Amino acid sequence: MKEKIEIVEGDITKQEVDAIVNAANTSLLGGGGVDGAIHRAAGPELLEETRKIGGCPTGEARVSKGYRLPAKWVIHTVGPVWRGGQKNEETLLANCYRNSLQEAVKIGAKTIAFPGISTGVYSFPLERATEIAMTEAKTFLESHETIEEVVFVCFGEKALKTYQDVFARVFG
Ligand code: ADP
Image 1 (cartoon, protein in one colour):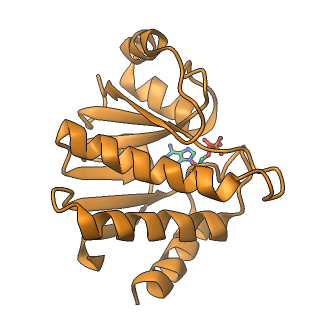
Image 2 (cartoon, helix red, strand yellow; image 1 turned 180 degrees about the vertical axis):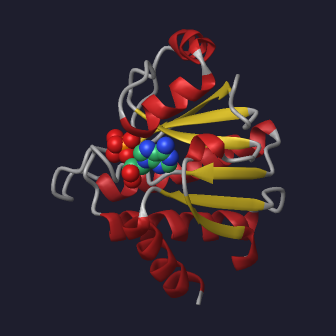
């Protein structure tokens, strides 16, 4: 299982995978952070499509095409805003990873790249978020053989170190 996990530092919009995951907001109309970067790189057709989708509740996922991105699809998921940990944040974040992977299976994507959902403006503690990401990926891969590669794209060195440490714990 662990050989299907890859941890890289870089920009998710540059990833040559079948699908990249967007840490979107419930409107699906774009925003800052990774969402803004994905919309800029994909081009205006992406917003046209996500406007038609008409929003996405927290924890769920929706699929669009990737347009000018190297990735064929974008899986938009909405992470929880961290409000101290008593508002179901952990379950909702786990749902984001599981539902995104489920969408990947449905569209036949074999390779998928994730950003650190909720770990930017939404302030989810990085280490706990990373544990949830890794645990959900592990559990999912154990029961779904069609996914060949899950790439965790770390934005910056601190995130990279955290992902490597958590990977060693979860898969070690
Ligand atoms: P959220 O609102 O879910 O917290 P953000 O976009 O603010 O979403 O941040 C999510 C994560 O994506 C953060 O860890 C941030 O550092 C990272 N990030 C921002 N831009 C990019 C990018 N171009 N590629 C990969 N990760 C990115």
